[in-house]
Image (cartoon, rainbow, N blue to C red; front, side, top):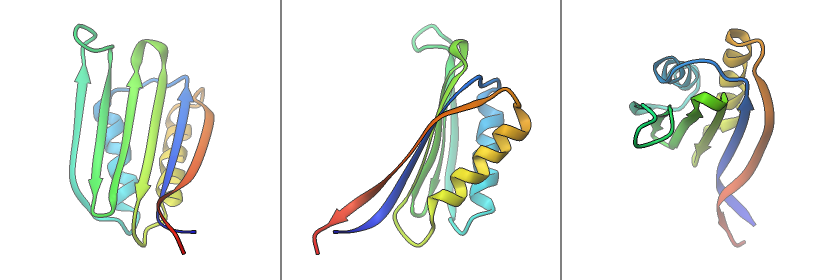
Length: 121
């Protein structure tokens, strides 16, 4: 089977940061890749209607890069999904390095990679 896309997910504990900073991390990684950013947004959650934290997304011409955080628990979920010529591993590795450099206590708990848009033949 062949695939047209690749999806990488990363889960962290020990995250300390806010949504605006995380969005800047995502955007920097995308800008250093061959992907083209088409839109970026962060939504901060105040803990009243949704758990305290944020969701940040950078839409790219080949899909998206996103981060979701439960602030009180210090957990962060990232995903990098591309469906063209850009390998999401480079973007994921860039984000990971920025996180480790800025937050020495952060710990990568798991990293998964799967093929997407899987086709027969």
